[in-house]
Image (cartoon, rainbow, N blue to C red):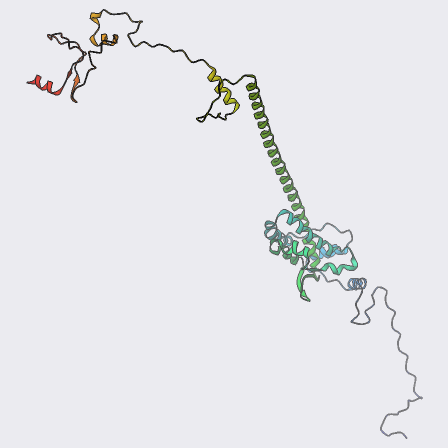
Length: 363
């Protein structure tokens, strides 16, 4: 029995039948299929296809538009960024990194940075492109070439290229997330690194050639010194041998001995000189006359003064002692000739006058 005021529990057969559901459109070949569940992990190829299907962000500046056009073209034209965009990259390398490292370290670090940026722009394996966007800072190569030299200024350069520091599962890493204008920064950084790496390799080659030339010069100096020493040694040996041969030919005439009668150890050359001097005859004795010169004419005895005659005769001075100067105030008054009116006696010669004699004369 039907209930009043309620809906009819049985369906009505007098009405028109319900329309069938509309069929779903077939999937397009250009659009990749969406994942069946949010927890499903896409393969690298599907993820790359999904990324290509997403709309590309419109560049905001002329440089970013130029970079985006180069990314889309296969051959592309030469990359020419603005000079203002290059200034920040040059400042990091020129003022913070290159002055504080050696040329060998600069080449190694710049090569590592160039490899990182090149793998990011053109990955060797496109299916593993996400692997080149993650750099573990615990890697020994990264620590030796990026973090340690110049207080980590190479890390600042990578941050300038779009890399960001992240910590995941207690592990510090640099991650490149991409975004608007990030590819342009990577291209600019790689361009700057290529120029600096070329200059650093040339400087390293010059330094290597300079060190090699210094080593060759040092080796040449050592060889020259050894040759001079060997030549001096041979000349000394030749002189000693010549002296020994002379000693065997000429018998020794004189051998020097010390106070104890032992032979004096001298060199052969000095011994030869001593023996030659000892073999020379003694010089002749030359007699020297103490009288008057035989070359002067002899004067008569009356004209020769007394002191001159005494000097000519060796025995004349025995009775006439040498003149005395008397007291402290005495002085020689003449040559021994008598005064006028003075008797010529036996006392002739130099007359000495003392102070007392002078006082007597004054009285």
